[in-house]
Amino acid sequence: MAQILTNLGIAIFIYILGFLITPNHVFYTRIKKTKRLERIAKKFRSGNKEKTLRNVYSHVINNFSNEKYNFILQSYKLFFTDVEKLLQKKQFAQCTLQNLVLITLLINTGQFKKEDFKRKWRIIHGIILHQYILVKIKNKVFRVDPLLRKIS
Image (tube, rainbow, N blue to C red; front, top):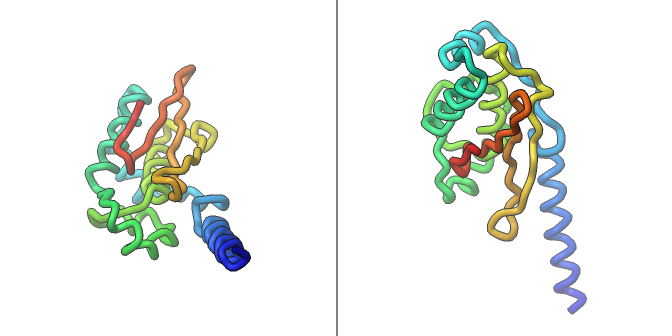
């Protein structure tokens, strides 16, 4: 019994340590604003902030896959932080990366500010920490989850 508790304690410690050292979980990557990102984001800009949000969301879900088997196989991507490189090709990206791309593009449209976003966490499948975003537009809050393909 003591061995089981020790192993469980080690597993929990490793899980928490991994959570703490991975970018965009506790310590968020600084949102980049560059001319290139502004040019890309401009394509999604609309006169209506909600429409801009939906345009960027559509771009993210069309360019970043969400196959479950890639979560482990491509776990090294959790340490990627360069949105410009992520936007260069269609690929798999974990929830934190898809959210980083979404927030970066929305801020680069010039219609959103950092304060419009709140990152939230929940546990899915019993063990996986999952991040989604709350986006505030006027008096309305949208729950945006590109990885699980939900916006409401």
